[in-house]
Amino acid sequence: MPETNAPVLTPPAPAAVPSEFARDHAEVSEIRARHPERIGELARARRRRHSLLPPDGRLMVVAADHPARGANGVGGRPMAMASRTELLERLRVALADPGVDGLLGSADIIEDLTLMGALEDKVVFGSMNRGGLQGACFELDDRFTGYDAQAIADMNLDGGKFLTRIALDDPGTLPTLTASADAISELAARRLVAMIEPFWSRREGGRVVHDLTADGVVKSVNVAQALGRTTAWTWLKLPVVDDMERVMEATTLPTLLLGGDPATAPEETFATWQKALALPSVRGLTVGRTLLYPPDDDVAGAVRTAASLVH
Image (cartoon, rainbow, N blue to C red):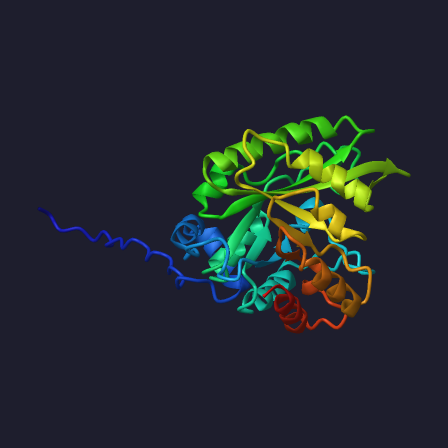
């Protein structure tokens, strides 16, 4: 054959594949851009506990699904949770404490932390309904815009969590109740925990407010714990209120206490949790902003104190 002077074309070298886990936020972004399939691969390979509950039967779970609802405020700081890189660093500090059993988060946060390897040997609950944006006219028609039951199974998670606000003065309550019942049934069919967070709510001055009396919480429990085709896999996530003893007499379902937005001094908050943790059916704490954004910004110290109350 005749000789040619055509150049020899060498295919470009494939992009470097990052190490198994991302070392920093820049590498998280690099994996997302070049190797998005890595998220599913690492999720399916994630080391899970043999049992949901540790030997002492109690759970300490850090919550981080607030920004997905447009709720970035902590105390007097309205945009405290706006920085994703800062939130992830605070979560990594919290999850590194051996007394922290796991995470409750939206898909974006769970995937970031999966890429960072921060969820190995942890219990993970995916947040399911994030459509009721804080302050929206449709807030109580709380659509399931996050995980569904199949995605929770596919991502190798331990269960799903959803907020169910019951407002007799808002028609958005009915589709939320229906969707909550469907989620409970679909999770139970896959033997996954359905963690329901109910509130007896109303609109007041254009805002959604919750009835945090014992009577209000009991009514929310009575409605929520009857949803779905079975309650075998249903857990509750409840606020700590006055007369918590009477609240817990309303259910036999395993219950995690809700930390909420801190409204009192940390010492007073911890004392309230400690008292409630001694009640039957209470299995631990699910706390987010109180621990991730403490007044002194000592995340490790706040988490260590809360974990010592649970375990």
